[in-house]
Length: 327
Image 1: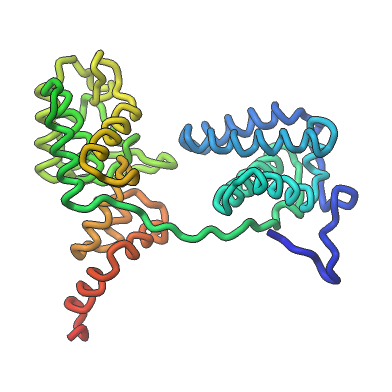
Image 2: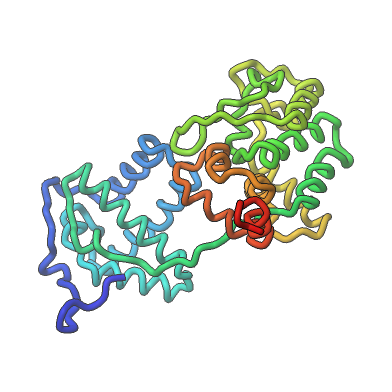
């Protein structure tokens, strides 16, 4: 976060803000609702992300109401200084928030202010220049190859209808064998049967990518399609719950929770860990990083590059054996 200015003085507070105000005064909760609608609809952020913004910004508005003595409006937002934001973040840290959560809260505030400037002409240079605590990079935590295989095998077996086992096995194979997010796998429809060699997937940010399906994944999908007892029209979700409605993500998350308990796997063995495993196992076997980026649907190569730290020893060996000067 920004520190004292020249001479040890803190940046100017609410009395001398660097602001520009062009909007009529609007109440904070109206602004928050409009902002959340914007990021959920125009920017197509996931419901989970929108809820995280709601949580952080609701806490911020609640703090400001006590800090300023009244619920903030557009004029109050324009008049805030860096010290006001630091006071809020200090309060949150006192409540036990980690550096990562503090950085996320500040990011939510800055994104909110970006929207305020575009939508209502409210600009505040002090807040735009604030920096949060640095967050240490976290490596993805994939499941191992044997664990991935065992999870899928156990999902297909057990005391359950055959079509449910086929469904769960096919869905987990979409994560591990095709690198899909769980939301992307659940977005498949009846028209995706019989399983094609390539799927057209619409992922985060409404970006479309083409994902090839290996024979094992296609066979699993077709087996499920042959066993599912419900009619699945072309335009409706392919994966179905016990009563015939669309399968909810929570059902699969709960299934993985039960399986990892039975197999003695850590809490990090989640559906998303299978997608991580897809990437790291490809990379460890010499796959091109750009190809993995395309398969995962990452907008930036830097996002994909985090996987290079997961199996560094094996990658070093691949590099030494494959490079012309490696020997």
